[in-house]
Length: 479
Image (cartoon, rainbow, N blue to C red; front, top):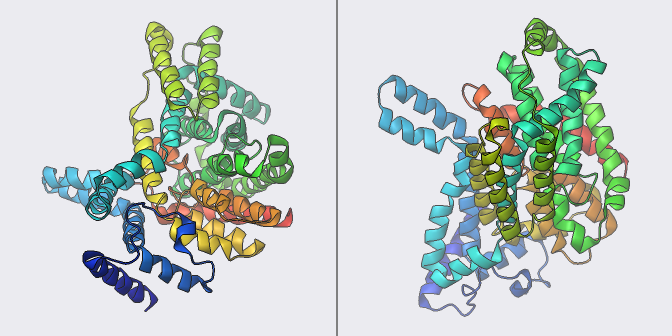
């Protein structure tokens, strides 16, 4: 009934807009939160009704956002339909359904009706202003660059040698490799950024485990744990995790503050979750044993010279330092491509398809997420510490956790306890869905090919839920 009333308000807003509405806010969209003038309005639903009444487009952009989320959860079904049509030789329709089933293009695809509706309602100039000035595509560009650098042979060999030494010190079996990758990889995210850590961890898991066709339980359990660990593994510093980056400057959080308040808790959560999943999945590791020995015996790739590895690490450092300066970031990446060309005998083929698809996904998410302030902000502002922690976790499943923490910075007067709760909830929920954390699409792009019917959103949710609960409990008890 309440949803119906909001739809009615939208229809009335459309009519009044055609007749000349007394409250004209379409010249600036989305409106500044202060412009709604609802400080004296009590009740969450009353605030939302007031904001839809003043700007009916709020409801439209949120319905499109929900449509994109629903499409994301249906991606696996589109792929099944495509396979069925291929068996019937209907290749034209099958290709279309394959395209609609590619998770990485969904949010970008739903930007098309959003663009048309906004252009029709607020005008071309306002749409250009929103896409050019009110949202920033720095994070998608950075993810494309850092994914491409992290997937090079030099960086992967260095990471694999380091993790290999730990795995062999622990016995060298499948379980030892699994624990080493899922512990060290996410923690590296606090130094080399979460997207790079996701890329390296996913590529190593693909090479060492997923090529062996593990059981669905092991495949989904590993994926869910990887996503959760990457989400919380970047909070040891103030510059590596996107949701932390959003609040570090406004709230004055430094690396010592992050480690003392979040970092050690994240380490504890990773160790507890890894141990629980390991003992649960131990029978599956035993079945991989003989296959894994064969993988260990494979001839190593030609070793990349140390100076080339050092140059690659230098390019990664440059990318981290210039992440918020697109001209310098892209310029450095173009210079890296030239370097890779002149040293191609020591390079693998530069992987651009997956990074570009992930960049498309994140760009679409940024476009839609920037229009959801009108309903997320009043929800965050009305919750206590424990409800806010749980609400931030839940909201993160339906929006990028960086967007959740960014909106928290717009809420005036948040106490230290509420700031802790919203960041803890946002990073804890970062593994529940593909859209919950910016690096997740990178992991899906790398590992999705090992799931014949595509990665099931429900399967991912169930696999990540135990680790998410463990993380929430750790953050809750450490307050």
